[in-house]
Image (cartoon, rainbow, N blue to C red; front, side, top):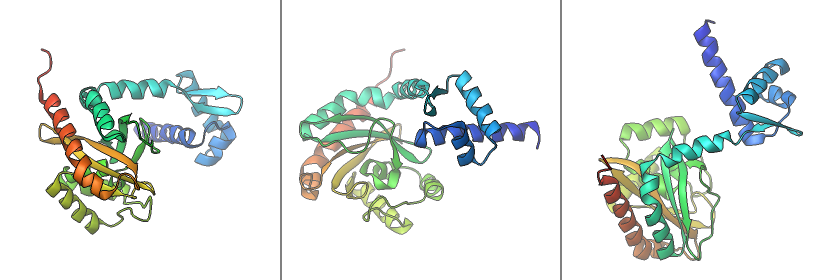
Amino acid sequence: MDDEGRGIKAVHRLGAVVDLLRERGPLSTQAVATELGVAKSTAHAYLSAMAEIEYVVRRPEGYALSLKYLDYGMTMRARLPVVREAETTLEQLAADTSEAAYLVVEEHGRAVYVDYALGDRAVKTHARIGTRSPLHSLASGKAILAYLPDERVDEIVERRGLPALTENTITDRSTLREELAAVRERGYAVNQHEANEGTHAIGTPIIADDEVVAGLSVAGPANRVTLDRLEDEIAGEILAAANEIELMLAQPGPE
């Protein structure tokens, strides 16, 4: 293997260490070595180097990711125009519906939650800022998929699949295609127990310069956020909120 190949392999292994510590850390050097199938000396070399550049910290119970990643993530989040422009509207949408309102973007074929606001009756779901979820399982995610080019949707499905989060999650391509066509026709997507049992949601895309840049959703307990309420009441509110955000995104910035 040449130097370039070894460098690429090292990058992938570093990524594997980060993913492992995110999912299961803190872990000992031996545990990292066992999980990655490498020698303990190799794991130690990676962990020591990562600690030196402050990517991991060593605790009594083992190695863990450092809060440097929090700084990176929040910095990049703050640079997203849609996050800046949507904040007030998102809070108003949550207040108007009394439910939880979420803003997500697509990255590497997944939905990433970048902001949320809670109304006075809101029941917060599993989602937090930074949570990554399958696009096809979310109302906001389906709204994004519906307005992506077909070839991009195919790439995402090929890479990420259509995993079932509940018994109601869409798991085949033909059903997904039909669902996305319906979303385009009515302008919003509905999620009935597809991401979480007992939760309903409605989502709509946010489009800027003819491209979908985010998805906006309102979610709540299924016994209160019924399909009738979603379509008869909340649909109008979320469509108006998305339009407001789109108008703000279209305004020219300072020169």
